[in-house]
Length: 237
Image (tube, rainbow, N blue to C red; front, side, top):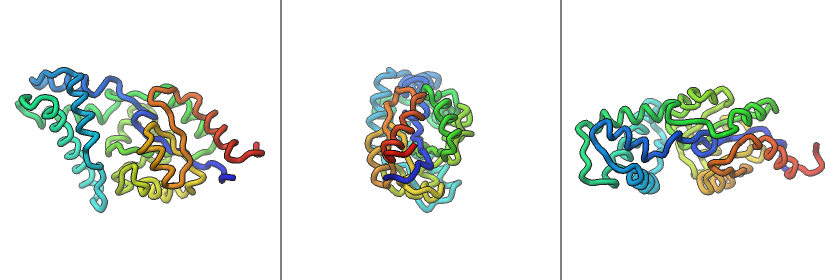
């Protein structure tokens, strides 16, 4: 028997929100406006390679203001490395101006859209009295993105490395979040799309887990959650 479900946590990218266009296309479009023209597919491949080996974007012990600065610096390095990995000969006349425009773009609603069914699923879960939180490795721009997409109001808390002092898959990311929400791991479900950062990490912290496909609709999520809760507590209605 598990305790009754009290809270549902959501990963952000690939679960709640998704890009309107591939990274390579966006980076390529912004780069072209600053005089650098490279194939979108090559930029996208370079980005994936760079991000896969990048250090965690977590800065424990730093002030909130300093974390915002360090997160921005983290992305500055990743973007520069992406273009170096794509074409060592590519040269921006003013890389910082290019980066400023790109960074601002990903901090608003123009770059993102809710995954299908997200809003209706969140509304239904809130109507059941469940506490909802976002649990994401996104940076300090995430609340603004969610606000722009009309999703922020559904959540009691938006939690990231800046708040946790750790990044997924570190279980400390989840334990600090649960302490803030004042809920027990067994009464909490984490919904995400990544088998390591979401599923394995949440299980290691004692949470229940539901994995979704990145392109799947969330419209049936409330029914799936209700079914999981019944399976964990047979005989209860």
